Image (cartoon, rainbow, N blue to C red; front, side, top):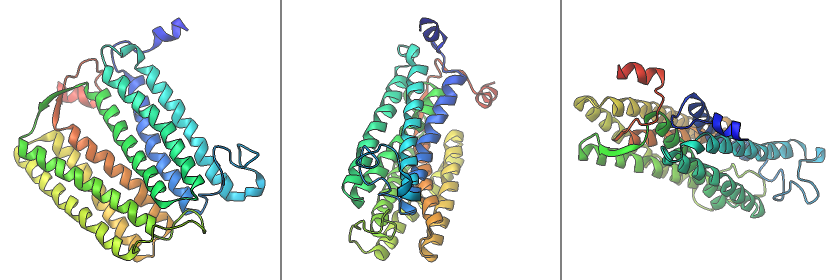
Length: 313
């Protein structure tokens, strides 16, 4: 055991830590996709109880058919996230004095997994209450944002708190982030009013779905406009890190808007709705990166990635 502990990174966030940081971000995003598949295939009650799959079994039975397989498969992915969270925690354990922020982030990500499991259980026990389902998605989005911070800190080191952009630019970036979050939250309410309940007998939130689709588009277009303005400012002031992250944000927004328009015109096909859900988390990830580029980093205890090393030279 001592030999294993000594093998762990001691002061530098090396390749091992970078790999697990990316694994954390990717897994937190992918589970949104599998959770969406549960809903979009009508498998939300494929396992009709929790924490067991049935009253007598922790696993899906053949009699439950494809819905049981889909729902139980999504539950199994929770254990993958647990393994990744544990590996992430131990990968930074020896660095807890030099890099305490990394340890805190892995703890936060780890605690988010049982929280999600409990919310998922409540979702099943309340027969897919749309507001609980929405909360489930909100927590996923928060965990994706935390995973982005983890990846960024692994590469860039601790934040110095030094603002790298003028105050008005910071205010514009914050407004863009708020717009992105409002867009996602309104989208969750729209989904709760639409046809994809996860089960034929599940309740909807009772709101006007067609009206909400239009309401959902308002903050989306405002956020897009703010992003364009932020890019123009970043170009004029030659804020290279901000420029790169905003270009990524605009790319996600363009695709997300296109998918949103297509799904509305085609009657909300399941595949497009699922893509729209995953892209919502990608949007949160990239807008989080935009905010992270506003402040400086110490670069202490960081093993530079090849592209970072080349630009530093």
